[in-house]
Amino acid sequence: MRRYLAVLAVLCLAPSTLRAEERWMTVLLDGRKVGSLRIDRQIQGDRVVTSQVLDFRLTRARTPLALRTELRSTESESGTPLAFYASTRMSTQENLATGEARDDGTFQVANTVGGQSKVNLLIWPTGATLAEGQRLTMAAHGFKPGTSYRLRNFDSIRQQVANVDVEVIGDEVVIMPDETRRTLHHLRQSIAGAASDRSVDIWVDDNGFIHRSLAPLLGFRLEMAACDIACAQAPDQDIDLLRAAMISAPRPIVAAMRVAPIRYTITVRGAIPNPFIDTDEQRVKPLGDGVYIVDVGFGSRHGDEPGPLAEDTAANAWVQSDSNEVRSLAQRAAGNATTDLQRMRRLRSFLSDYINVKGLDVGYASALETIATRRGDCTEHAVLLTAMARALGIPARVVTGVVYADRMGGASRVFVPHAWAQAWIDNRWISFDSAQRRFDSSHIALGTGNGEPWRFFAAMNALGKIRIDRAMPGAALLDLPPPSNASGPVAGGRGAP
Image 1 (tube, rainbow, N blue to C red):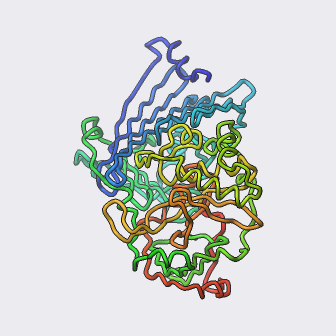
Image 2: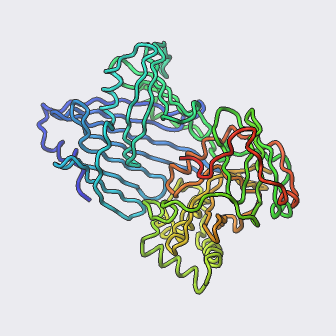
Image 3: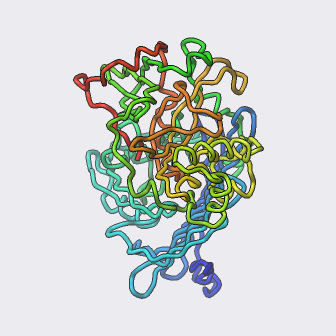
């Protein structure tokens, strides 16, 4: 992989041309310290290099989970993008993305996930900005209350642009972690078209540097606040992400009940559009005021759900279905099966035993990494099963939702976050769960995706706001007509974007 452009720039600069500043922020989740953010900004001649290193520590069922994200952008003094670097560590391996501007205006981009690297060319999106460009844009628009404008933020991890609508709320006195008071400009940012409860609030100084931020994350409130290095690196506090995301069941969901359809009555707090999805195995009816009827277990029916998209058959950085390792493992598992249904059943059965170490310390691993380590939890099962299906030419996708557990992480009779796979077979989507060894009506789907981690996390934003009020069993539910959408729109079939 080519050396990052900024490294060469640093080596070539004389000390007198280098100016650097370092800032720290403490990271809180629902008021408990879980990490730190270090921001370095260097002016190297006519270039500005901004580095951000986020360390984040959580636990899942008392198992520590350490996450690290490192971003670096190189821009001109006017904010023109020149290079980017993004490193994420959500598992045992580092995932890396780098981009460098070429003379023809395109960017040469290299992505490495699960040890597999790919290089391509990117036409830089019109108006897209990195860290310095975003700061300059905010400062240029000023901080008069009521001012609104749009930013085009480039996500260097995904290499995609987010259209962000910015509203200036006004000046506020903010108490910082060291108990000093600062007058800062309050801005509210929201992804264009997203729900209002997913907006991010930031407090900036006159130059557009952020000193505090508040954002929703997996049903929690994520806060970052500027402080000194001792404050930022103070010991973290334990917060069990899995335990906090659990949903109490209104009754025991016994094994005999799970094999038949179940009708759930569910209440969702907050303005969350389409928290559940319609699939060939699940039907959703909104009743209003955040109440939904969710019927699960229509496995004998052909639904009205659309067929596969292009992303349901293609390889990507996390679902490496075009790699020799995935193809070989899929062929080995499928054996001499002659139908897609038989192949999927064999893949499911094979993976249930192949991933032989339950690794709650794995945040999110790619298919190739899971093949190598044979460890992980439901996300690793779902991603690898999806990759193996696509390697055999079977359209497949990852489903994000919750599933019932008699006991998990010290809690009893709860629904816990979960992921599984769906395959397109005989003109319908059929679920396969290699982590649980079976799919049943205790699975409630929140969204679907192509196997990339941000799809999974986006669908989980409703967690912490869901209450299951009732679970009614009965095979007679199979004879119910499709729910009417007279009370409101039925949730879309593709889930979170």
